[in-house]
Length: 155
Image 1 (cartoon, one colour):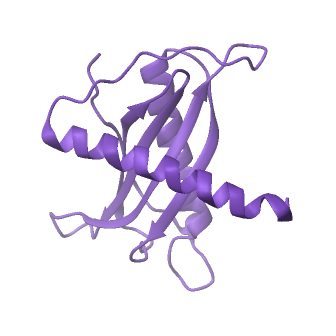
Image 2 (image 1 turned 180 degrees about the vertical axis):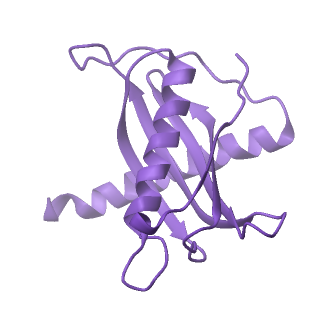
């Protein structure tokens, strides 16, 4: 299967503002989930649910009125899961270059109408960059297991 990124572009709006005058982190997280969902359902061909959002990193604020670009791309697949890299960029409307503002990995699982997991097509990395992305996803899976073990006494 072709693994083209899903790309959303739009202008940040005054309704996205936080108390500091920038785009609210919750708005960015919503955009991440929407782009991730579009990517996961496109890849799997099925309804998909978010099961993990990890290591979300906000580098710089997004200003109201900037053009926002959200890119989502599959970087690893399990039997029913899809690990999707999400990058959020923005730029001033008068500038040609986008700056990276946020990054995270989000994991979706394809499910049927009863919530039962469905198999997803296997993604096979070809380029060196794709192979590095897959290794990145695998390392993060190992770290998540360690974090979950640490959290067990508090759940």
